[in-house]
Image (tube, rainbow, N blue to C red; front, side):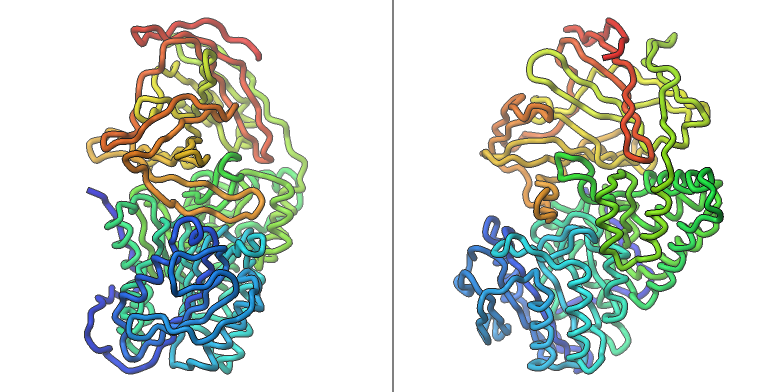
Length: 614
């Protein structure tokens, strides 16, 4: 049974039905449908259109769509190339306007659609949905594949919606929805706060099927005069229920945010990152407190180079909670930030692998990259926050080294140590295990006995590995929260000849055991375009999967998928393995320990060979 939890702050779920609306205040639902490769490759936009056509549209709701952004469409309603506008009437799309080809990643294109809806279909209330890939606050949303994946940046979104509000005679939009990955961030909310009342979006990667559009028009129609919070809750619940029906509920997120509360969140955030003095030691101490809070919080999007580089998106409420529990100078400011986020988020739904998602993310460069931080600071609407980040990361870093680079203790564990006065400079510590015979096989884990106060760490010699259908997976961690019962991994595969990644999780069951669960196939964040792929598919019988080496890209082994294919924890194949620690400091530098070499026998016993620097 899939366990999913819903967190309510205000309002109750609205149950959509075919009944007449409780009041006759009118709504316009404006859907900006940028098909991109979600449509040309996977027919996802066509599926959304089919859902809308099957919906019962109440008399007080008008559904207006603008479509484009895909090289090809899988429905006869669309023509390839150009932009089209439709109104939904009697379960059919009525073409009301066809326009020359323009990029749907242009603010002028979005603004023109918003102005058109306001002029031609005025109403008491209005909701706008931006549909497509999302790449988070650094990369934007709506990637037009006809124009080199040109996308709407946050600045573009702000510009377009300000023009739309002008066309509505100054009336803000009631709800702005982003049916896209990674867009439920404080940055997005800050950009929209002057032009909309509520935002509905996902912190995490979305399944390819997206929201439930069969229910959305009725959810709007059922809104009471002062009940838009209940409508937002119903939208989140509808998404959750659809994901569960499709078997995609384990790692979902969707939240509704009251944008009138965002100023308080921004003020609290600025207090958190403001240093009391400019002393380099104080700045490093604050930086350490921030990084440790981020490291302890739920993270979203890409975490590895092979998934497109770190998204650096963290749950803001959990980051604040972890920071308030620390002994640093910003503890009280973190506490106010936690309260401010909770006040702003009116509803959040999530799955067992995203149980700590509280509804609003923030970009924080815990996986530090100088150019990525500069890009963020140049484009974010959180200007004061960006200035403080630049100051904190301009402090000269202190080089971290192992005091014990590798030794065996009396329990035959592989141990290292870091001086206690330098331990605060460590962002992450993990183990790498690599097979040395045949095609290289790598695996990351955090199965480490850790004493952070003394700086001592111990690890037993691994004798197991994750495997798909018995074939080893080169697994790398992307999310680690043993306390809350989930560890998420990614592994490079080729699916029917197309290179991608397989995400899976270890989930803590009620009986204390850890179970492995496949989450889905994800192609990551594109290095060039910046778009974040959706979790598009599960493995299906007849699929052919090649498990790949992360170092060479060559095939470790091939699996022909059937109904029994699953990810399991299997004994390591007999042979020789290298094992070492990798410490990553606050500035993104990697420090490698000496290498333990050991042998796994046919009887699954481990034999020490050597520890040496390699």
